[in-house]
Length: 235
Image 1 (cartoon, rainbow, N blue to C red):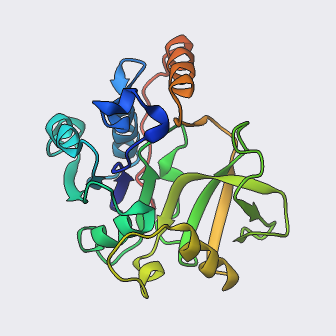
Image 2 (cartoon, rainbow, N blue to C red):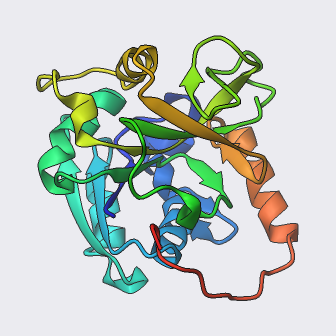
């Protein structure tokens, strides 16, 4: 399975930190935020990765290069200065991602979610990882039903973590340009084409300097985990 990290956003709420540094390169516990994601993806068996770039994108390509440092092959999908939003960014990158389902993760989240648990071939068009609603987003995004289907009603609402497995067919009717992912997911939900899971482990949306500082402090206090081997996604 290929993966994509969404890293093109401006990070307005993170200013002034993002005036000179793209949000995914902001340091957390001594490493850029995106490096935490790279190591987790590689540990789950991911070998090929697409990263979209926008604001200060040259810094990302300079720091990450071809991904060899982390045992990955990274290619980049550059976007215009105002970026293409989540949906438009993924749609532009589809030729790099291929015809099979692919993993997507937002470049501004930290998580200890084991990517190896994601389905290599979702039943429908999308599989979403949902988390408990954080204080800054108490109303949540979607509802997870007992049968694993995700919708907008029918159960307690949870927050979309920014982690998903998507099929290229989700974008079948799209055209190039700037557009969000949410409406595509909601349309697929009405057709029963979106499944999900509720992850109760560590997850943080790094949306403000305060949240970044809190995460940095949390990780620095955490005991170091012992290395372990994990099967690749889909095994």
